[in-house]
Length: 220
Length: 174
Image (cartoon, each protein chain N blue to C red):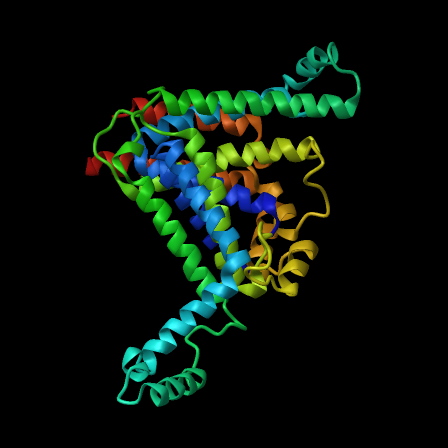
C-alpha cells in the first residue's frame, strides 16, 4: 500500500510540475495563491461554510419557500423549522474531510482555469520557475489527498493543520521507517548484495538502448 | 519512505514525462551525455579509479579537512552533473539520428536519464553526509537498499566506459 501511495504522490507532484512547466510562472503563482488562500479559508471559515451549505440544502429539501409561505404562514414557518431541524445534514460537520478535499480540488481547478487564460500563455519553450512552483502545488495537493484517502499512509506533513486530521500511525511511520512491501525490499536487498549487480544493471541498460534505437528506427 | 525517496521518485517521474515530450532520439543523446559525465565523475571521485589520486591532490591544495574535502568534492560533482544535464537538454548535443517517435521507448529513455541524473545527485549528497542538517539518519530500509543501486554505486568506471562506447556505436549504426 505504501509503495502505491509513494507512486501516487510522485505522479501528482510530477503532474503539477509539468503543468506549470509549460505555462508562465505568473500562472503558477496565481494557482498557488488560490490554493493557499483556499486552504486558509477552509481553516478559518470551513465549519461556517459547512453550516451554510447544510442549511441551504436542508431548506430546499423541506420544501423551501413553499413551506414558509403556505396557506397559513405562521404554521408553515414553524413546521418548516421543525422539518429543517429533523432533515439529515448533507455534510457531516463532525467528519468534513471529504468535503474539504473536494473544496481543495475546486480551488485547484479554479487555479488551472485562470492559468489557462491567453495572457498566461508561455512565449518561450518552458518555464523553470513555473516548474519549481508546480512542485510546491503538487506537494500540497498530494499531501491533502493522501491524508484524506489513505490516512494510515499519510507520510507528508501538512503545511496548514486543522483542515484534515493527520493519523498518528502515519506520523509514526514517517519517523520509524516505512512498512514498504517486504518482498520489494527483499528484491532490492538481494540485487544490491549480488556480486554481479553491476553486470545485471549494465546488461539491462544495453538491452533497452539497443531495442530503443533499433525498434524505434523501424517504426519511424 | 522518507522525503529523500519521494523527491527522487518525483524527479524520476518528471524525467520520464520529459522523455515522452522530447522523444526517444533526443533522450538517447542525453543518455550518452550523462554516461560521459558519470564516467568522468567515476574516474575522478571513486577512490578505486585511476584519476582519484590526482583529483584528491588537486582538491587538497584548497581544503585539508577530510569532511570538508568530501563536501567540496560532492558539490563540484553535482555542479558538473547539473551543467552537463543543462547542456544536454538545452541543445541538440549527440541527438540520435532517427525519425518517428515511440512513447514507450521515449518514456523508458526519460526514466533512464532520471535514474542517472537524480540517482547521481542523491549519491553525492549521501556521500557528503547531507550538508545543511535538514536531512540526516536514521534512514529508511528503502533508502539503505536503494542507495546501493544508484548508478555511481553500482557501475564502475570501466563499465561506464563500455556503455559510452556502446552508445557511440549505436549512434553511428544505421
